[in-house]
Length: 285
Image (cartoon, rainbow, N blue to C red):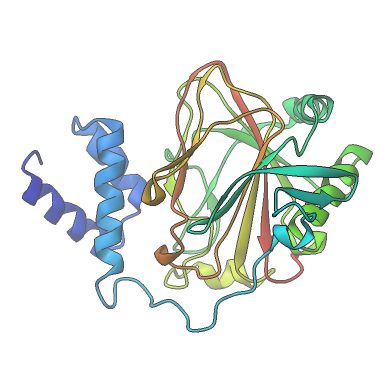
């Protein structure tokens, strides 16, 4: 598959057959392609597929309502957000994808306590099977993880109140907070967080809370090297810095949202994050 035209045709054919992008990335790397080149080739193929009628659903004419963190900003040009028990600095704001980098959402002691509470609960992370909506182990996601219910501990109560205030989104409209651990070499290949309406399994997933409309990633430590969050379409790379958080929303379950993102491999040390996915309606697990 070294010839560019042949490679593009192979990618287009596989995507048209319904193959998962992460599986195609794995195949290209196994065939000798560099990891970054493989990710780029598949992302470009997904962009081509999105432009072909019938391969991707058209964006809805009615955008979904999404969390709007800046509605609670102080009179500082949107540089600070009032979040329950603290003010949070806005370090970066991007229009597409709609993304905000937020400074010191958690303090060091909160990060350390959440990691400590998670260690004994870790299990291999799963991904959604697009065919039936169940969760399965997959090579695209090589982390360990666990979930915490909303009111499980006083620490979780504090963090969840802060997240709800920060995002302007009801706590009950969120999935349980998920803590993830990535060791050296672990990554999460490019993916979207929303549930694709074209996938057979999406009806099952949206029945328990509606579509996902926003994501908050809390960085619980700073890896020695690697572990960034990247958005290939935007050329955006966010370093994992302890206490900071990345928020992004998607008002359409469609590639036009530009929210294709990945967690790059950890190359030294380890990476700990906590993720909250926000739904349209109250989430029923």
